[in-house]
Image: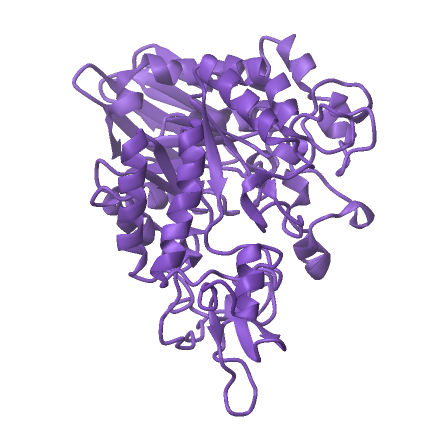
Length: 518
């Protein structure tokens, strides 16, 4: 499965209000089709107050007017199906908005929903039930004067966490998913899976030994009790049973404490189909780091479960900047795309990655992300990877005729889609070539992966199946390296800044190659 993530606020603005919408995605559907992907994951478009830009859901069965109407979604769904592309809906089920009717009822003790959220009484001195803190900074408990209890929120205080230990809540979430499956969606990406269950006893988290890298108090704890609980496993089995009724796909986002171990658990025993973490979205771009991630994934995820590899998304700095290390932007972007598309498992590509877009530098006065506003300038938030797609070199990159919700910088307009379409050597053309290459080689689509000994700075592995064997080499360093091959390497099937001779393969800066290893 090759998935293309669309952040709807920033993809296509059909009505020129400065914010992308569902009709804007439909207008660009032929472009997405040309990329060669299997499915589109659309970040949340549900009705929402937009405190966290849609990840605070007020109604799971309504489209927010900002993005259009339910008819717009149904039109997009039908056109995508006709194009052979599935639509994956982003389900946010660990929490809702405080504006959701369920929470209003729970707060007031109405309609049998008093226990639908994670409420807890204060300690005798009035303090919070335990030491849990929010991902976005500050305490994770907010006092509610109406109930005279605290409610728990993993993220913003306006995003109360559901009490997933309550079987009625689980049944309701299953019902919300069935609503979209009945409509014909191809599956779901499940947001923040590790946050869906908390410890029943509400035990406090232990302290972390090394807090030198902590941005705020969340990084001072080992998150042993506020996430990653074993009750998640039978719930995932309930979800999979539902998905199998429709032949639908599932992808888990897994972060937090020991995420790759959780990925393995969440994809075992016919739970979810695939899972990804932020392991390849960190600053460390060394060959050793990538080797370690591959090794850990291979050791934890058992077939038919699959790892999903991703280098960028709407929450992390773009890989073209994060892993550039002073190298040429376009060449580095091509190498990272080739690396991603030679991995074993599912692949998730974020909008703009096919252009090699760098992280945008959004000035403080244009910042929208409250997380970034809170910790500026130490942390500049998530807006830099969320700026609108540059479709051409015109005003606002052709995204909108009015000023967009986030600015389109000159650096992005200079490498727009229209310009790259006209350049056969562009990152965009390479992206299509790399996807086609993956599809043409069964070793990449379904083969095994074997990590090979290699010089420092070089990532080397073999992808193989009964039909073929491929040698994959990537120079992750900022200087050139030579990889000795025995027997002598054959013709380079796909590559850049790489020369094969009788002694082996010379890999220049941002160099990589894929060779037949018959």
